[in-house]
Image (cartoon, rainbow, N blue to C red; front, side, top):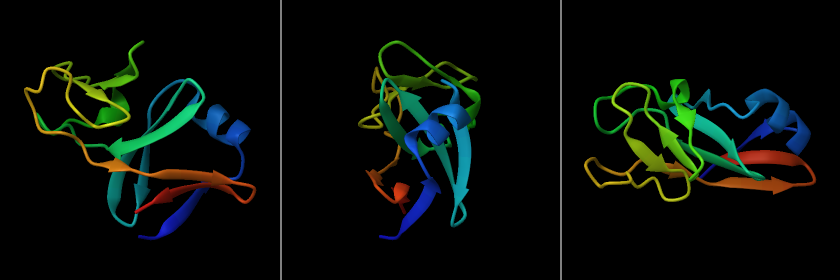
Length: 105
C-alpha cells in the first residue's frame, strides 16, 4: 500500500470539503472524500448499485453518503449499504500526522 499526501492540514481539508463530498483521483482510482464530524473518510466514488458518482451525492446525519441517482445510502466507516440491497463500497484508509493527511491506495 502506498500513502499519498492529500492535504497539508486538517483546516485545509475542512475548507476543501466544506461539508460536501469531493472527487479525488489517485493512481487512476476515483475516490469520494467526505468529512463527517471531525473525521475524514474515503470510499470508492462509484455506487455499487448503478455506477453513479457518489461525490455528486450528499451526506446524511447518520454518517452515510447518499447516491444522487437512486438514493442508496452507504456507511462511510464500513462501506456497507444501509439496507444491504447493493454490494459494499471499497474503503480507503486515511492517516493523519504532523506531515499532513494521507490516503492509502
